[in-house]
Amino acid sequence: MALRNCPRCGNRFSSRLTACPDCGLNPETTDLEKLKKTALRAFRVRIYHLKMASYVALTLIMAGFIWYYFKSDQFMFSAGNGPWVIMGAGVFAYVVIRALMLQCKLQYRKKWR
Ligand SMILES: [Zn+2]
Image (tube, rainbow, N blue to C red; front, top):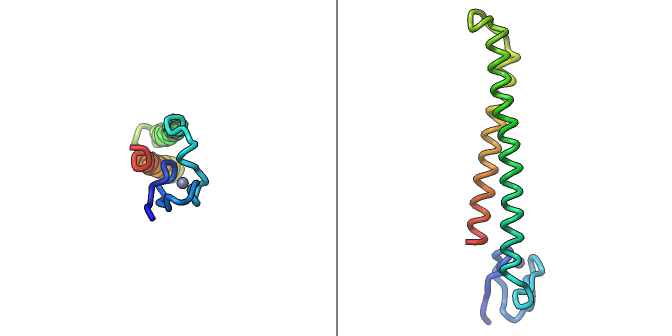
């Protein structure tokens, strides 16, 4: 009994089965190039959305900084917690988004290259 890799999900299954038990793909009747193109398109769309979300996070950081600048009268006085909360939320969101991007890239590379 030989094992083979599913081209879509990477699952190993018996060559006696006609389709992958995990995702249902039949390697004999599936156009792999088409599958690859679809995966690449989905990957690019996901990266695009994550990039847009990271720009929102960066805008949040900048907004917090600008708020701090004006509320503190050009860094002469304390500005309170508001600007720090906004900046902190922006930094946190940015780090999380970058981590999701990295995970997405690693998953894509593992599956398709
Ligand atoms: Zn599969």
